[in-house]
Amino acid sequence: MDNRLPPRPPEPRPRRRDRHGRGMRGPVAPPQVPLAVSRAEAFIDLVHDSVDRLERRWPQLSDVDFIVREVPPPVSADPDGASPWEAGTVPLGRLVTAKGGRNARIVIYRRPVEIRTKSRDERALLVHEVVVEQVAELLGLAPESVDPRYGQD
Image 1 (cartoon, rainbow, N blue to C red):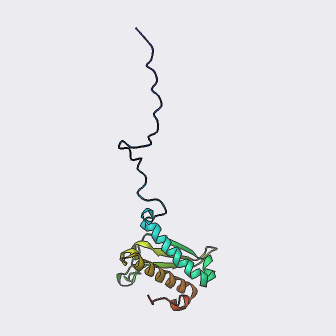
Image 2: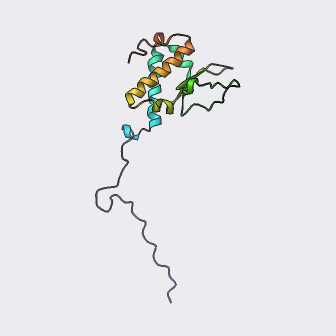
Image 3: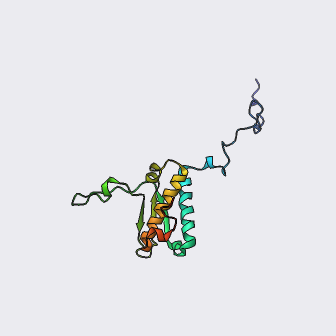
């Protein structure tokens, strides 16, 4: 009887082609193509574009934190029975003033904005309007003075 082990099989070679000889499949789209960008990332890009546009005119906005959240936090009714959200509308953005060494924050809510728009262009306009309105509230100005093109599109 032979007690020898069978020879070790050679290391498998890495596959360079699939079985049909066409090469291995790669990603559906390269990272720089818009297909590879999620809706959340595209929304964040819209907010950044709007903020960059406003920071050129209002340099003090560099001290403001702009945050994107999915949805606004749930609210409870006031003791008087009135809802903090007027007439059942969901807020699109919110200003949190600076306190205790924290920068002022402007929060934009992604899902309510997306629900109210049908196309990317409409979404970009609405995001910019919400950002302008919140910046105007922060600066104590009218939205038209923050961005002269506000409401014209």
